[in-house]
Structures are given as structure tokens and as C-alpha cells.
Length: 584
Ligand code: ARG
Image (cartoon, rainbow, N blue to C red; front, top):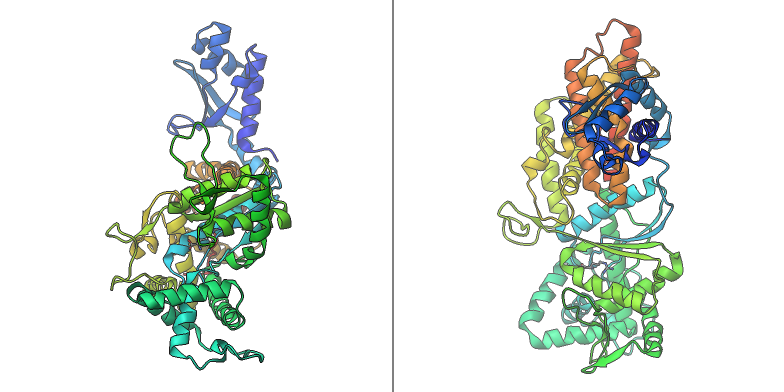
């Protein structure tokens, strides 16, 4: 279905042509002076250059052609050549009535049907999931939903850090604590127990202890490195322990992500790249692009015209160890083979930008990635505390995701209980839903690349530019609809007030706004749109007697309008990865 703005553009372009000017000048935009008009066209200025005529005269010619238009109730030429446009209420209402019939409210046609691999989450197994990984999960989940909304096929891969030194640290620490375990017995040839020798809480304690110890105890650090080496060479007992660590941790991760309404299609990790590393290195060697540099093997990635110096991408260290870039490059080999994607998108902290630039260049230079495939890294900023420094617990430790969610949930629950609408049980359940909305909206409403300040009170406020405000607006509409009681099947009527007109205009802009969010992989655009829409709904609600309207047809029209607004808001929050309760 054609977007409302495109209808207007077509009409004005035709008027330019009919008046003898270039139709391409008929571009219409939403007015930046809503007090004067709703839409505007500035095409008379460029048209003046070829027509050798004053812009205002051209604007007047065009405006004359628009007088008969069914779309515009007024078209005015103003100095030096602007065309100010107001649409007819009936054209807008009938457009919305068409839109209402469509799945996704008209946001359908723009998708290019890409195949995309989305790499987000990226937790490091056995280290507690902390807020450093929160943003990647939240932003990634939303981008995945936006892409799918536009018809892309997206594979979301969590890409766990599951093969590094942290594993060696845990194994070394376990060996010190429980040397009698069969995993450490070189002579043991039997089956290893199915039960893991630790719980998740033990595991979460073991890692930080071991990590701290390795910093002060050199012998222990050496042991951990050795254990990592043996694990990576599949030493039997260590590998069995690693599998236990994975089982216990993945179950915990799934529970955590589930609470956040975040999900992944595949649960692969760095360890899965291992089998592709040797053949990849061999191929690169044969191609002659893997060069020796002080004992290490590297791919030179600097290019002529680079503005900053790009160091070579190191794939094998002089001691034979492979690195983060090696697993990432091998993972690309696997992704191209398994999914034949059009695009690979990565979401991490912006401090990894250089890493991805090197890996991407190596991938293109070597032909691991065909030229047509798009490689993109979105590097986001950090979530800071109110002091502007990376977020910490009150005692100064790294904040665990679970604690963070529990904090917001508790805060929201207390607020709901104050309202005294819900029973304590319902309040507890509802608080969980709202807390996720508060947290996600607080994050997603910022431009991803910027740092932002995490502030429970601000994020969880029921008023202002927050997730709970959107939810509150949806709940408000739900409540009107349920009090209305009848099925909302009417058609939207031409606006009979400023606030109805404003709401209808905002609704007509949804496809454009969502397209922008899709084009720029930018959930913040969805947030800004939803916030504007919620504002328009609330203004309309305050200025309109909906339930007491005596004219039944009129009332049906209002109900149809707020029903459409509810759908639009629900689609927006779904794209952001949260949902609304029935009451709050
Ligand atoms: N585990 C990494 C970290 O915590 C993030 C992984 C991101 N994805 C990737 N393919 N490198 O920093």
C-alpha cells in the first residue's frame, strides 16, 4: 500500500508537471512549522533554476493546479517560494481506514528479503552475565525484530565466549579444590559422571576467585594457561569438565535471557569455530595473504587512503596460539557456508570497533566473504551510573544483570501497589512486565552509539519519555475499549478536532518512521515514534468525550481510531522487545 506521504508527493509532482515544471520537484515533507501547515513542498526553489523564473511565481502556478485536489484542503504559496499544504480530513481518514485492514499497518512492502546473521548477546560463559552484555542483547533483539518485520530472514546467534582462558582458570581452580575428581586422573578411562561437579552458584564463585588469584599468583596463572591449552587440544578429562561448565551455564543464560524477552536461534560460540580454523589458515597461507611478522602470522589490512593506521590482523601468535580475530574470521567462514547471508551484523561495545574493522577487511581481502555481502558492526556506548562512570553496584562491584532487573522490578512493584488497583499477586507479575519495558526503553531510546546514564527512577517513571508511559497509554486504551464493551468495528471518521487530526497524522506516519528504523538499524527511531504517538493519544483522550459521546457513529469512529492507535503502539513495543500488561 502506498504511504500517505507518497500519495501527497504524487499529487504535488503531478501539479508541477501540469504547470509545466519538473515533476521531480514535487517532493513533500512533514512541515517543520506545524503551526502554519501540516506538510510543505520546497520544490519551487530548485525548479526556479531551470525555469529561470522567481520561485514564488512557480509556487503560485503549482498551487493553482492543486486547488481541485481531493487530498488538500489548502495549498498556499508563500515567500520566497514555499508551498504550504493542509490535507483534507476525509482523505486522511480514508487512508487510515485502508491501513487498518493491513497486517503491520501498511509497513509491508519495503523489505528486501535479505538473509542476515545477527551476532548479539556475546556472553562469556561461566562469568556472571553482567550489564556489559545487556545492551548487546537488548539492541540486538530489537534489530532482529525490526528486520523480520520488514521480511528479512534473520539468524540470531549468541556467539558465546566459551573457549578462552576463563575455562582454564576454572579448571585449574577446581583441580586445586578437588584434586580427587576423576577428571584430573590421567589414568582414568571410564565414563565421566553425568552430574556436573558444581552448581551455577559455585561456578559463579569459582571464576572470580580464580581470576583474582591468577593476578597475584604466577604459578597458578601458568597452570590456568596450561589447562586452557590442554582443553583446546581436547584433553579428555578437561573436555568433559568443559561440557559440564557449558551445560550448567547455558541453562542459566537461557533463564536470564528469557526474563529479558531475548531469544536466539542458534547457541554457537567461539568453541564452534575451532574446526574451521586450521583449514582456514591453510587456505590463507596458500593464497599468500598470511604473512609472517616477528613470528606471528598476520593479514595486512591497511589500505591506501586510510585516515588512521590500521594494524595487521593477527591470526596466530608466535607461540602458536590463536586469537579473538581468528575465531571471528573462522566463524565468518562457517556463517557464509551455513547461511549464505547477504549481511552479517555484530553488536558489541564500541571499544571493539578496531577489532571488527580488521576482521572485516581480512574477510574481504581473503575472499572469505564475497564482495556483495555487507559486514557491519554497531559499536554501542557504555551504560553509566549517575556519576557518569561505568555502572557499578553500591559496593563498587560489577552489577549482575539479575540484580539489576530485580532492582527495577522492586521499584515498579512498589509504585503499582501505591496505585491500589492490583492485588499483590497481580502487581508482582505486572511489575516484571513493566520492568522489562522500563529497562529496554531506557536503553533503546538513546542513539546506540552514545553512552547513557542508567537511572531507575527516570526509566521507571510512569510519565515522560519512558517505557512505562507507553505501557500506561496502551493500558488506558485497553480500559476504554473494555468499558465500551462492544466490538470495535467502526470506521475512522474524518477528524473533528485538532487532537483527532494530530493523532491521525501521527498514525499515517508509521510506515515512514518504521522504514527509517529499518534502513538505519535504529530502534531509537521506533522509540521516538511510539513516544510521539502516545502523546497524541493522550491529548486526544483528554480532549474528547469518548465513552459519553451520544452520537453512536461518531463514537464508533473514536473507538476505531484509538483501536488503531493501540495496535500501532503494540507493534512498536513488540519491535522493541517488550509487551504491555492489561492493567497497571
Ligand atoms: N564475548 C565477547 C565479549 O564479551 C563478545 C562477542 C561478540 N561477538 C563476536 N563475534 N566477537 O566481548
